[in-house]
Amino acid sequence: SYQKTELVKSEHLPPAMYNIYKRPLLLHQGHMQWLYDHDGRRYLDLFGGIVTVSVGHCHPKVVGALQDQINTLWHCTNIYRHPKIYEYVETLVSKFPGDLKVVYLVNSGSEANDLATVLAKAYTGNLDVVSLQSSYHGYSSSLMGLTATQSYRMPLPVPPGFYHTMLPDPYRGIWGGCRDSLSQVAGACACPGDCVTADKYIHQLNELLENSIPAGRLAALFAESIQGVNGTVQFPKGYLKKAHQLVKKYGGLYVADEVQTGFGRTGDAFWGFENHGVVPDIVTMAKGIGNGFPMAAVVTTKEIAAAHAKATYFNTFGGNPMAAAVGQAVLEVIEEEELQKNCKEIGAYFVEQLVQLQAVHPVIGDVRGKGLMLGIEFVKPGTKDALPVAEVSEIHENMKDLGVLIGRGGRWSNVLRIKPPMCVNKQDVDFTVTVLDQAIKEYLN
Ligand code: PMP
Image 1 (cartoon, rainbow, N blue to C red):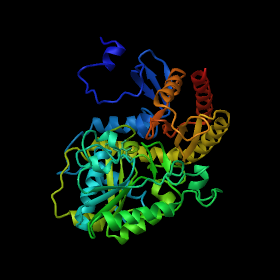
Image 2 (image 1 turned 135 degrees about the horizontal axis):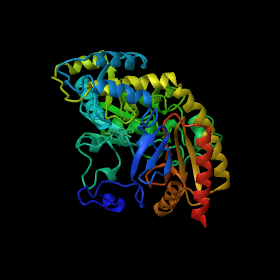
Image 3 (image 1 turned 60 degrees about the horizontal axis):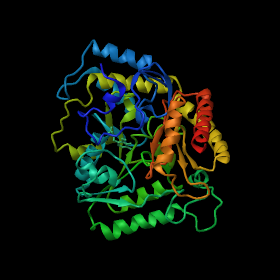
């Protein structure tokens, strides 16, 4: 049998495959917000397999639904129908506002965003797509352009037809950023007049649409409602609403990537875009939709789906009976266990505790986020310069050794990301804050 280090170093795995810890961690079991390694050591999971374990590892209701389906029918492809798919799409569309009534079931977030570009192009007849700087929307040869972060694309260039607009980052905005990103997002910051605002970024987006993209060529703008991989970046109040209006004026659609922000995680709303008072033309979702079961979806209007109906659409695994059964159980658990409400309450408590810790440790430059989608940005004290990666890694690794698995992200990998199963409680928050405090102290010593 393999030793831990041999497995992690296996020459049969691609060298580009990224490993989050220097000291290897082999996970064997999960139960709700807890994970167990091969020695039986327990960890609080604050990353949820990257925002994917939405209702809890091996949640009994989801396991039960999958077991029932496994014993009934696994697969038939979308050239046939099975009863679970009808039940599921009906439940899923009931969660959407406006005319968002048609569901495509696919298998991953990348596939969902790929399909959304096809739908937007088919409907508008245009080919150019805009996304925000530092975004991550997936990994495929066409999404190499939609994902604006160069490190995922190396050594390839941005493919033709993709443009990136400036990221409206309240903490690190190029116009100096805000002293207090949480108040800026709420539209209540008390900074002087030169503080970052939505309007400056809207002006820049307008420039891009007017001067860089040939007239009549815009198919869509893709945006998350909180930028996830790039370290939980929230946008200044009003940005998404104005961006939506602008894109419409130039003939494009607005695609909301809800891969991380969906399914109640932001607390105040089921979908992140709802926090911004906008209704997108297309919504993509994955990760939390299946609590770890590989599935994803694109939801759009009947009108947009009709424009795509000229094509023959086929997907071998999309909407398979197991995925539909799991997806249905996940939606029921979110409702029955009031997990959206839990995200709101526990998220607010988390921010409160982290802000208190920030006052003690000037290495914490910014605490931000909404619900159970939070970020803690590390800086060189007294500046906004990112704390070097090796130093953040030390804090991150210390937390693991003390029993908490937390995410990493941001342009300089200096942001710790909190996106746990949505069932975490106050004791978990207290435990995390104690562990983070200890992990920082160990790093400082
Ligand atoms: N969109 C966002 C916002 C994501 O965070 C991710 C994955 N990190 C994707 C799309 C792609 O999802 P997948 O890995 O399932 O293809």
